[in-house]
Image: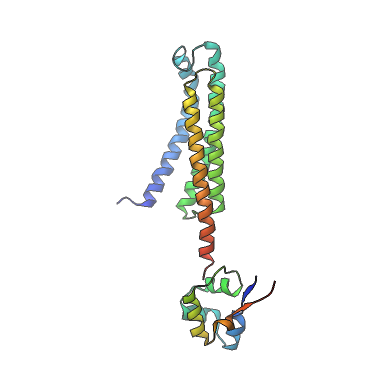
Length: 149
Length: 68
């Protein structure tokens, strides 16, 4: 039967897969840029280099966010949900999303289409911030409940 | 802490150990310790009722208001 514990394991496995995917993507990024040269995002060979730089710069917050997500899931597995650490992880993931959004915004020099991706990243960051606020309030409620005898 | 729980005083008077009392009122010794050490933020009426029953006292014997 499907249960919350299995769901957390699935999320954990997916997170690790995405981490692997980021590494694979980082590895083949130069080839990808070459392939798409002259197409949608990279219209000019000169911009290709700077586009690659922004792509690699995006990998840093992405990997850090995935690391935080992995730690968060590890805490959830341990049934420690409404704790200070999880709020901290969520806040960091949210800031990583904003950082990626900013980096993509810089990359819009190659194509205005990337503007959509920047908005999407910022939106995810915003949603995570709200989730963080919710967990923060839940933490206070849990604390109150735990200390009601 | 404006409201103080004087549980240890009344427990000593009734000669009841913490484990015994916790067992009697149906809460964990850890929770009783929270209450005894004035770390609790609130007390349920049901817990207070059980405490009064087990210690044969009034809520006022357990809880006290102290000017800060």
